[in-house]
Each structure stands twice: as structure tokens, then as C-alpha cells.
Length: 221
Image (cartoon, rainbow, N blue to C red; front, side, top):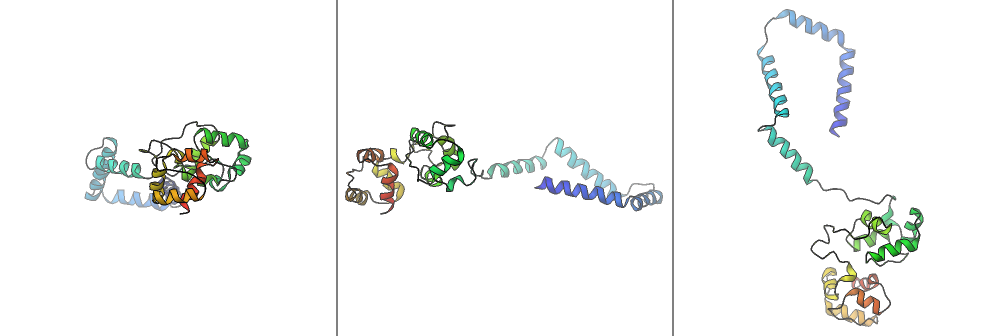
């Protein structure tokens, strides 16, 4: 932004000088004729400009400290979340995403399944990304086959990089914030036999379900 304003300021300065060239030249000629000695403020201004110029070329305190502070501020800025190339892809279903990206629906589902992400055509793309701690762009890369393995994002570091299906029921309950006892009862009421040490995917496979369906039961408690 400062570059844009700098260009505007420079253009305005050039235009101002061009429109007022005669008065400016007359002023400088008159001042040059009035005195042949350098005034104190001129010398001071020249010294300050020289100091700043040298500090920019060969950084030293306080100029080096200012540059370091600028770098620290820029590095501290949070990087914006990357978005997939299809506008508002996070609001689309998997089926709609396949249509807009000209990729076979079965291919997208197969790519996601290879990354241990279970989906069906009606699932919302953005919801899937959020559930698996991925950005929409990261999930899109996996769905289109451009990336095979799931990236180790900031959200799943320390968790082994596993998805929800790889968690035990106890771990899943801790993540969602519910008691494992209540979860086991709710799953049993839904016809799913489970224990705290069973993995979500194992429970889903035994009952012809998807891990996302198990999660939905738990989140509804």
C-alpha cells in the first residue's frame, strides 16, 4: 500500500513542479542572489539527509534496529489461509466440486479415501476440511490427486497426523468434549458396539458406516 501511495505522491510532486516551474525558478534565483553563504538550517538538513542515506546503505544503530523491527513485524503477520482455485469451493458439495473442476466424482472420492478421508457426494467440502484440520486448498490438492499424503498442518502436529477415523473412541470423545461412557451408550443405542479403545474407523467398518457418521452421533450428544 505504501508503494502505491508513494507513486501517487511522486506523480503529484512532478505535476506540481511542472505547473509551477516559473515561480519556483524565480524563487531559487532570487534566494541565490540574496546570499552567497549556506544557511545553518541548510547545513543541518544536508547532514541529516546524509546520515539517513548512509544508515540505509550501511545499517547501524538505530537504523539497523529499525530494519530488524520491520522484519519481525512482517514475519509475525499471520499468513492468509490458502483457498482452492474454484471460488467458494468450501460451500460446495463433493458432487458439485467434481462438476466444477471437471474431475470424475469417483476419482475425487477415491483420492480422499486414499488419504483416509471418508466422504460421500453430499458432504460439504468446507466441513470436511474443517473436520480433518486442513485448509480448503490442502483438501483440494488431495481431492484432485495433486497431493497424495495429508500435510502436517499446525492443527494436527503432535497428533501423529491421523484423521478422525484413526482416533480411539476415547480420543474422539476428548476432542469433541463428551464423556466416553455417554458416547458408548449413544453408539449402542444406534446399534454400534464400541469400547473406549476401539478406533473410530474400526467401529465404522464393522457397522457398514463412515467415520463421519460416527462423529455425527457423538456430536449430537
